[in-house]
Image (cartoon, rainbow, N blue to C red; front, top):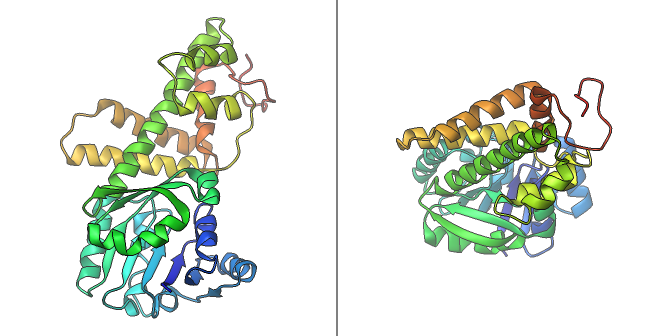
Length: 307
């Protein structure tokens, strides 16, 4: 039985860890908010660590799922850090939506201790995590991926070896940047159509039967924008972070990327306006404000434009 530690019980990390607590693995969990880890441990019948070092003691694989790569790096050092107890031959499996450069630095430090590293960000959102149908994009050695595959298969349906360390994070960032482009572009297009007299629901019906369709227009806009229901599934602040990573990658690789750079600027603006807790689809509210038009039939706040 593989001995696992799971660090990071956030919105996606919690259902991922729940799949690992099914009894197929020897699992211990740690979270920065102790109360959340304690509640998880009691509900799932697994042990709770009081520090990252405690979590990593005698573990074959340590899974991290945190907001940023900097958060992962912050767990490494000190008497309570992962490096204090990670044993040679162990693997750090990082499911954070992080940045390639920091991941390569982490991997180099771990390699000095004989510890393996894989960046393995996931896509599919909270629903995919709960259903165990996530897509996992892995960067690192193929042999290391095979060692951790049973863990990934517990919560992932499609597992892809993207390339060397950092490749998984790069692929996830660009994927999310394209999501950001779709949301903003659809919002601008529908705002222009609404002001031209075309109902947003009718416009989406046509777009979704035509070449302009995407998951954003087929699912996110009908379910959230038109209804005015914005469930908190993925924070706009985190999408801002991911788009920024993608823009950084393009610049580092000397790829002309005016659209990607503009998207990063727009999402920084949306993040600043909406705050830390808004859902990513709520960026549509910023476009509505700028255009002076509403795209949904749900109730509007006093600060929002009317149609």
